[in-house]
Image 1 (spheres, helix red, strand yellow):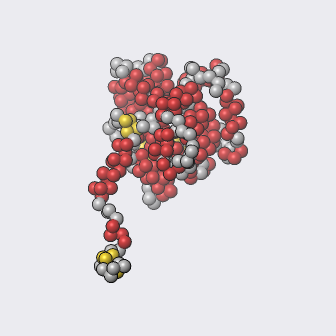
Image 2 (cartoon, rainbow, N blue to C red):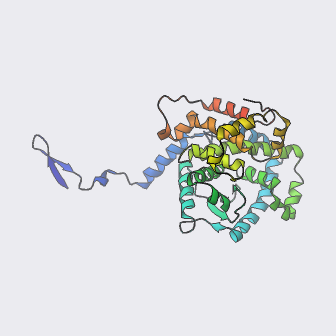
Length: 331
């Protein structure tokens, strides 16, 4: 310990190492993280979640036998898929795709979830990433290699953050069941075909409708995890055309105007059989989230003085107008 003199000549102790004042207690760190996480949870649901996500999920859960059926489907499908990706894909880690590993760590830390297992699937033609999870097994994120080739680091962060959002919102069984309904891989498993035959047409459309709402929730998670909120918009613009164009080749405002003309036509009903809203709808919804109070409660460093922000209630109401297929109208 060294000393320095005050103006009165009295010595005051000065720490020899300035880091002595830093709290390095791990328990205190965990408690601080837990308090931060709790601030963003409302009845066990992340505060950024799109309202229709939970509403539609609860309606499906209320259908007798639906949850048991989904659990039976995923219990057969998920172990099969994990074997496939262990055989055909590359597992991300500190020594293999370290940049993706670092991004995944950052996204998981920001949302307050455990670190998921990530695989890179060698497919240079398909722009895709998805999450596989059940209530009984650890989650798995699969990223097709085409994403690494055509998307920037910032855009990849929003995509990985999106997938972490599925985990954060406990989409597991429902999300995997929705993928199974439309995924050709399930055709190779006779037991899956038998289980899917039990799904009524209304139940199929119900799970697909929920899935589209869940994607809006996870797009918000992707923005929360982003380096820059604009990366979400450019990523979705690329997804619109399968990554065929660089973001600079397509004008976002022109794309939105082009889509606006189709919003009240029967063409939009094609989306009823899809697990995802079309990318333009997601761009509309993402732009609203970027102007919401919820985002800046997660990312206060982005807040700009004097910027008018919308409430969570107004945010969800606007998103419903944009992404609702049946009631969709022009802006």
